[in-house]
Image 1 (cartoon, one colour):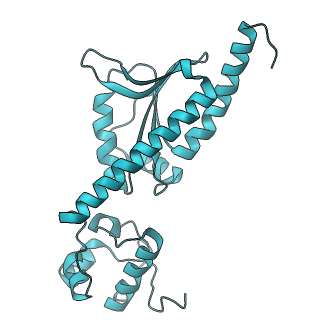
Image 2 (cartoon, one colour; image 1 turned 180 degrees about the horizontal axis):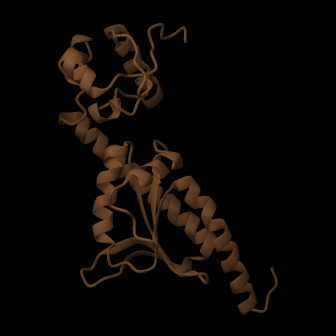
Length: 229
């Protein structure tokens, strides 16, 4: 890549020559080009064009110290205005995603069959969406996240919240930063297994998976009204 002459790819388990500050600078800049910002410390390990956090800590005194030496200012995303800006963006994106998903569900199943913020236990826990479907009722919890670390924290909280939810539950991950392959690999390595009634899917996979259920609903409704599809 001519734009990043010192860009180096990190391959796990393969020994490479010592990383230089030029390698890391190009890796940081490439991450910013892809994501619109520099990485947080936990994102470094998952980005294949940067060394591990341990290596940066050992050789450069940590990511924030390295960024400072490179002349990057206000790059600590866990503090101050960056934390507030990220929280605002995540909350807005989460709300936009909920609206988008609600429209999709209503379009596929019909407004009367889609309930939002439905209480499902005696603690007044609510599920984002509860859908009445002929093939089986199910719940949907949708959330946005950008990193696998945040995903793990979200899922652990949600498993506790929905421990008494008996019907099918879909945890829908939106945001576009995590692929279905990432989710599948996460499940393979997860110590605390998901309940048998639960799935973790991307927004895109969920949208595809409800097509069959929606078609089934349409046929069911048509047969009850004497119409043919």
